[in-house]
Image 1 (tube, rainbow, N blue to C red):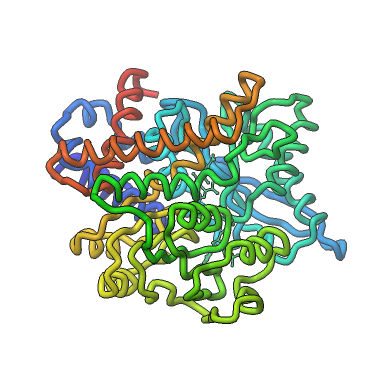
Image 2 (tube, helix red, strand yellow; image 1 turned 135 degrees about the vertical axis):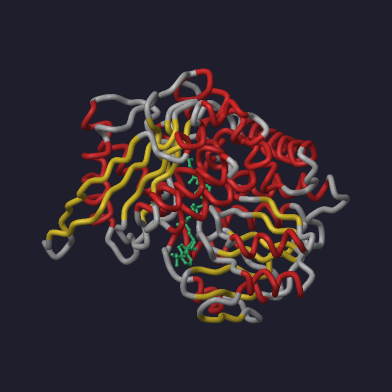
Length: 443
Ligand code: NDP
Ligand code: 2IT
């Protein structure tokens, strides 16, 4: 049996109750197989076995008091997956669905994503099953302070640098940062996605969505296409979805639908982003409210956003939100490109269907790397005690995304799988990490 198959079987056996983690490892190891099997050093040094086992997992209790005076307890996690090429780096997710499996899948993906950015960052991820929906600001603060009281022992600007993800935005990062600073009496770049008045980087808010559209723009350009005049569907209505929509619109594309976990809106006139931003960023409301101020828009409860006819689909909500039936609907409606703004939004089966039908598919670890890339730039600015302009960071972000596209498409070609960006991203991301692991000995 091949080395990659053997390791995959071991991972499945050892982590049998972690479906999302198994899904992420299956995708990576399957695409690495021909490459890894032709380099016997990797097997000799146990690179894959080590890569699939986190260096450290911290799980902890997060007690806090709600507004009625009741004591609540949530689970807290930080998975420090791989530090071969830099300090652990990756976001924190606060969502009731968070489990060890989800944090491990996200941490595993982050290793390759961070490597692809070209910046010196290892892979990590954390979070909690805490649900921020419907909580008061004081409850959010109480939770964040308790979460950081434990997390602070395990992180540091040269050790592990968390940031935001689902349910963790500027407000949460602010409370987390304040508590870290108080506990350690240090003012350092220990978190990214900070506010602009205390060490945050311009463009970080926009980075993931903008980066997604920059890499798709480059991919389209190299295939003789562009966003100009294209119909685009974006799922989600959070940080990534909002700024992906903004950049698509700037490039002349028409976004006709967005969603949240309750349902989706379709606006044939094109999404009015000011309305979405007011609902989501200011009022923390529901996407259904969009139809109150847009006369031709309709709201549909539940799933179904991928049945809307589009040229380009950008899933920007959450894992496994685009399944085989959705892929079939997209193909039938003539969609020719899919870019993953979210982490692993497309199921393995759906990915295969899209690729078999020649839909240009850019996987999350490449397509959504702009967020962590600008986090890396925030770390640089913090270390240098300086701050760059919006234009400067935006230019660097664009360069990084174009470089990622070129490296994943070059590697795909090299292994004889032109336009298979899944294989390209996995091999390109793996190479640098594996080389560093080989050189650092068995650690
Ligand atoms: P936000 O919390 O800002 O927004 C998340 C959006 O996705 C909301 O519209 C939310 O709807 C929806 N959503 C979340 N969970 C579910 C679910 N279980 N089912 C259906 N819809 C859901 O998060 P982000 O925009 O930051 O993150 C979106 C995705 O992008 C995630 O996969 C994240 O890992 C990924 N990502 C984020 C980066 C960043 O810099 N923020 C960087 C790279 C990737 P609702 O409000 O109803 O919950
Ligand atoms: O999934 C991701 O890349 C993020 N949530 C951003 C991580 C970061 O450290 O900025």
